[in-house]
Image (cartoon, rainbow, N blue to C red; front, side):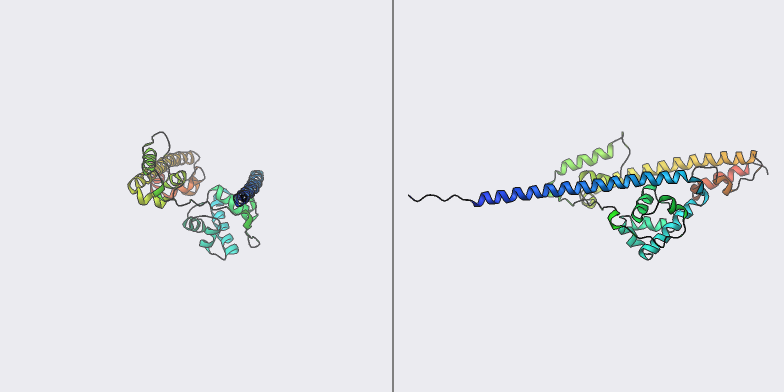
Length: 276
């Protein structure tokens, strides 16, 4: 009787798959190792540049700091990307409108964004705030932030009721701070537009709750600023100095809040009760 030849193909396939898995595992480990080294290098740089800034804090002019930042942003955008705000925003993974607000001096970037920009340009935070010439700067592509993409998930393969319950729990959670739909989508690993399409009412309610929360915080900060303005006016009056907006601005924690009508009215009312 003729012998049965062994079927070697399955074993070859399995062996190939095992090699592929091993190679993928090594590649992932190498990628994680590189990412860890880069993060560590950035953390060390941040520590050093903040230490340098503190050591030379006397060089900084608090009154002109916001103007210095917007001027620095304008020059950096001009010299690195020929004034193209949209390209700069894409490069640093930032909203275009946000960069435009910085560029025009209408808002000030958070420290984390300034640090990220400085790191990618190989410039210290102190130099960013104090120097006037940024012509030599170049963007280090190896240091640019990695854009985190949320994979679009089809809801056909998801538990619709489970997602709905999660959204309801976010909306009704009174023990935690309200959150944005962007954060909610990130936790679910589902694209925000997909959630808005299928759960429009819940998504709108979550966004409205967050906006109301932010408005409440802003009103509280404005009220606190009004109290500071009144105290500053009283202090200047006792010193025999006229409480101009410029002088009061130096004595309050948020001088930029003079953009709000309520704060300006607080200054006007406080001055009306004082004889000069």
